[in-house]
Amino acid sequence: MHHESPIKRRKSRQIMVGKVPVGGDAPIAVQSMTNTETCDVAATVGQIQRLEAAGADIVRVSVPTMEAAEAFGEIRRQVNVPLVADIHFDYRIALRVADLGVDCLRINPGNIGREKRIRAVVDKARDLGIPIRIGVNAGSLEKDLQKKYGEPTPEALVESAMRHVAILEGLGFEDFKVSVKASDVFMAVGAYRLLADKIDQPLHLGITEAGGLRSGTVKSAVGLGALLLDGIGDTIRISLAADPVEEVKVGWDLLKSLKLRSKGVNFIACPSCSRQNFDVIKTMNELELRVEDITTPLDVAVIGCVVNGPGEAKEADLGLAGGTPSNLVYVDGQPDSKLTNGSLVDDLERLIRRKAAEKELAEKDIIARG
Ligand code: SF4
Image 1 (spheres, rainbow, N blue to C red):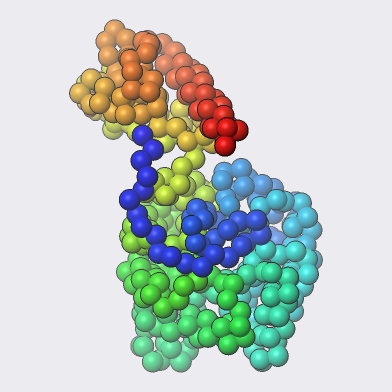
Image 2: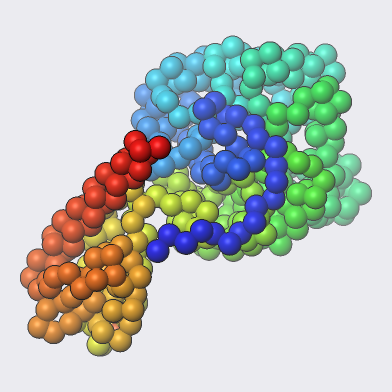
């Protein structure tokens, strides 16, 4: 049931963040950020590895001091995923992490200070093929813009971003991406829509300081969902006051829901009601955890009864429609076998793994045949 997404994406120029293309026709990249102490190399490497395992394409790491820059170099050596160094003001840190192998610098050129320093960072980035992310945030808007607009507005965020853009373009540097984040959904969405018409660089989307796991997920899904439906956005971060692994999972779910990317099991499950012939919620909770490691895209329907069961189950790669005395399994839209409630989760997990392995083999076969 993997229909193509009907979303027509904004055309942006492509940049490379390490091995990951961002913009152009590249898949929308999922990002997250470490929240460990960067100088604690072991803890940061551990967290980056967990983020990568969850599907993060790019990970950002704060580098507030020269000591953290040295730690960053060690971290860079120990992980595979492209790393963005988050730097504020201190151009020497930017120069150092560039030498230590950073894949992208998140630094606002207008905040670096004297032109000589800006030029040093931009020249180094150009020489080493490192892109820059301009990151404007409603919470740290320049004082003169706050005064001019009275309060943060979409126009103020975009004016701030365009100042940084003008500096890079003035130096002939075009390999950058831009974010204009705000915690207010309307402000962020408004700013990104304005910016999308002004530049052709990739845009990194985020609703900043969105909130905790549930409220932040909803806020991010509304804001980023609106933009992604418009075709805007080349890379995303879901900012949550939660384990950053959750940010990656939510990011993927958001892109999967818009059919912009596919990975792992996409569950279609009914909310359950008194007609259910097995415990849908318990089954789903257990199954989701058990098959988290599967990366092959697979649609699996878990439906409690025959009201909607056969219809949904037939559309999926694998479907289960509740029934009495036994539940009916559909494979590729065809009735296949029956399962009783006794070992339902074990049986479903086995069927899901078998189907995923089959699909993976079939895809490899297609690739091998060219
Ligand atoms: S599919 Fe059946 S069990 Fe599930 S919510 Fe609908 S009527 Fe209830």
